[in-house]
Length: 369
Ligand code: UD1
Ligand code: UDP
Image (cartoon, rainbow, N blue to C red):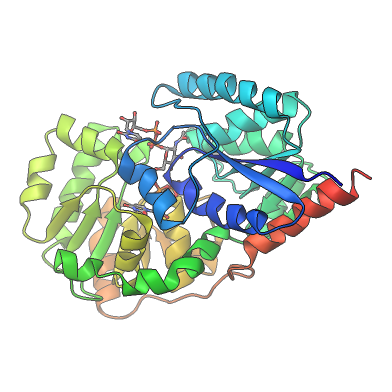
């Protein structure tokens, strides 16, 4: 039987640690060739190349060089560029991950070419349609053929939207596969030493949601709260390019950079960043991935958002949603050792890529007979 061809779509930082375990598992199979298609949504070396290196992925088979732009520009350019590749290569399946613009764009291309689409991280819902990611999740799930979910709430969301049960498979959280694959190197990395941080005596900060960083007053309030807690708990803030641009534009950069308890850096590679997360007293974030990683590690996570599409990180894990003015009290709880450690959700166990490959193999080899 001829080998199947699968395209794995990767676009932005949070996609790379989701695609890598799947790439490695498919590359080891005897029935399938996997090709990575990088749309180019993230392009700085520290938002892209560093992850290919850390996660031991080969160069992408195709690089679409879509770059930055408005939502329609980015989505449209991705569709046009990817359609050419998909029409030429006619893959047997397309795997899209997460909820970025490329996820919805490439799912639409696949669906209209009648190429089966698998969505890894399906079913998550914040129920906040002002988030661009929520639109991407709804569109992608509505047109995908295989819906691989990380948690029971995701299964439930899909069923409530009328998705047939046979399309849904709970495979767990693939970010944990990447973490476990690199755990030894993450634990051995000397990132804390490099930045002069003492284990459990600092918090890692990441912020990049448009709702937090694109509005001057909101970002100014956040900066003020971070400055207020930094004498109690030193902060290590790896600044996303969107956020850096806004901090500079709103004249907020100097105050943060000058604060003695705050270290500002460029985004870090995966191994270095996870080394800092592992040794942190807490994370302060609006990142989807960081909410999950801290839940897995039992590290307090203070999420500066009004909702989350990852509710198990709150109900089972160590995550809590907070308003900026609640940060100081939460930090005191953490310092007093009163933050619940939580537990790991089911199937967040390093075996997710294997379950995804099993599902894909059944779909492509058995259903097509
Ligand atoms: C995107 C995703 C978001 C995800 C985030 C992860 C969408 C709608 N948003 O948001 O879901 O959580 O990635 O980090 O898909 N920039 C650079 N260098 C880069 C990439 C971006 O300087 O390599 C700057 C550009 O000024 C760009 C801005 O960051 O305009 C925003 O980038 P974009 O990819 O549009 O959105 P993110 O905020 O990164
Ligand atoms: N990350 C990293 N370096 C950083 C910040 C984040 O390696 O400086 C990793 C981390 O594993 C995190 C992931 O990138 O879970 C997701 O990134 P991001 O917050 O950009 O996206 P989201 O998960 O919110 O979509």
